[in-house]
Length: 381
Image 1 (tube, one colour):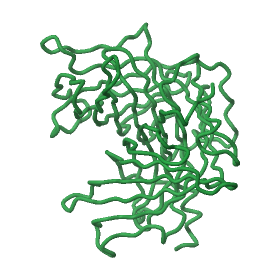
Image 2: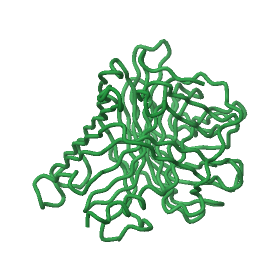
Image 3: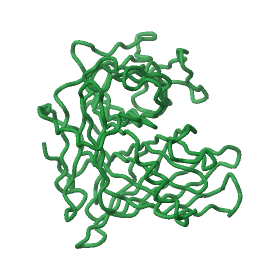
Image 4: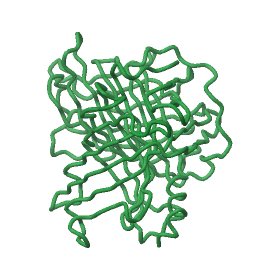
């Protein structure tokens, strides 16, 4: 079946992925619901902007020449974010049993009433539900927390009608209205939502002081022999080890009536090693340790990022061009960076990802968004 791998890889690659930035809107402030005077669930509201990310050409190191531009135009978005008991599972149409926000400790989160308008046509909306957690941020003058969420879309309208997909949301938040949230959206089997004509670059960029530098990359499994299950032949496995490749990835979308997504995969720029340890009672990953090792043609290895993916959410769905026997699925994950070396020494940050893959044989097409902070990385407007 190895001769079918390029065909299957192309089928996994050809899906719409939208990179966005969610910002506050003074005309539509957040709506906190208070319990005993303290904020409980909060209806986040604001504007959702196209977010273009690019880096240096083939000769450049991945941390050099990064360009982050946020479109001046923004469309409405909202989601209700609720601290919840650890055992609660969010359900569409159900109001979670919200708890009060605790700035100094990590909490489980539910994301309900998720609704994104993508592009200028208000009919083009996706609606979903998700979950995640908070990460306390210490050492800042004003108390902040990181929120991180992933989820699935359960309905859509306009150009997205009938489409399935997933999303991630993350960023720093200060109660009740201060936030910068990066958003990744994956739309599977997109049809006309994918175009081979490059989308125009942002004409009018928003003047915005970004709190981090963002780097976008794609990863894929280069061979059916790149994945090792432990113990061999036992499903679900106790451990999975994968040696993927990192490739340059660029995506932009049109903000016109049909928000068509254009993407381009470039040359390989490194290796992505994944070590997944599974629970024995469920097929969910109990531990996901990853290493992104970047290289250049001239210098070879230049630096790596080491991180732990804290949560992965997936859904099995049909993928055009992939036999159902391969168990195609979409997934979305997030996690914090543990440390960096080489050109990423001293960098701190976070990573979110969306992607598609198959189980047996194992193939992936993943888009990773790195949020980086530290002296080694500097964005360009």
